[in-house]
Amino acid sequence: MNNYYPEYNSSSYQAVPDIDTRVSQVMKRVYVKMTLALVVTALVSLYCATSVGFLDFFLNNRWFMWVLVAAEFGIVLGVSGGINRLSSSTATLLFYLFAVVNGMLLCPVFLLYTNASIAKTFFITAGVFGAMSVYGYFTSQNLARWGSFLIMALFGLIICSLINIFLHSSAMEWIISGAGVLIFIGLTAWDTQQIKTMAQMAPNDTIGKLATLGALSLYLDFINLFLYLLRFFGDRR
Image (cartoon, rainbow, N blue to C red; front, side, top):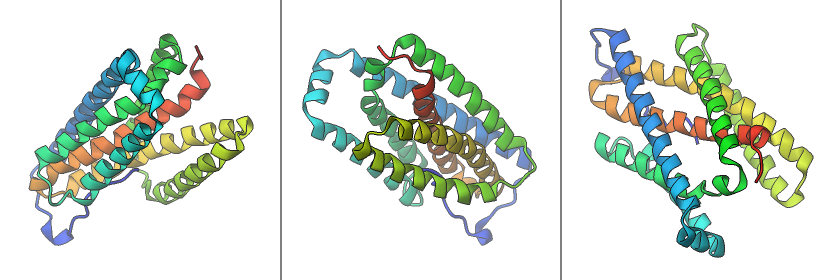
């Protein structure tokens, strides 16, 4: 679930007086929106994990989890596929709705792992994510080739994860976790460069939408990286 950037026609590009300033403004919006979404997800997840009523409903109605998963996919596809029809404020609202739904879905994390190990893993994730995002922003190397390989690897990771649901192989789970960390480290750098490139060429009236899509993409990178790292650094209760 990455790389949901609008496709722009080159004939619609507008000249930007100061490209560096424009890119800087877009990236600030991206990181602010992404950070706020992470805060929303954390607060919702923590609340749900401490709510007896929600946990009772969540754990005794398995269908609800699949409703949340379907809602996530629906929101992501709705935002990415309908970005040209949505207003910037609507796209942003849907993005934060996604963060709320994801918070409900991730509440078991607080039940499975200690708070200290969750906090530790979060800061490790933030450090790795920050370093790779900075690299993706400042590197002069074209990471386009990374993208094709990483997307194929991501699909392979999803397939292996589905297979392991039936195999219950602990060895395969560790391999999947290690591969997941590497894939999302690479995607963080690649997505950052993609956002920067699009910000340099995007028409003025699409900047807000691009910031939301960029925030969604980096948010997904961060969350997935966190979950895979948690398998290495998380301490079970």
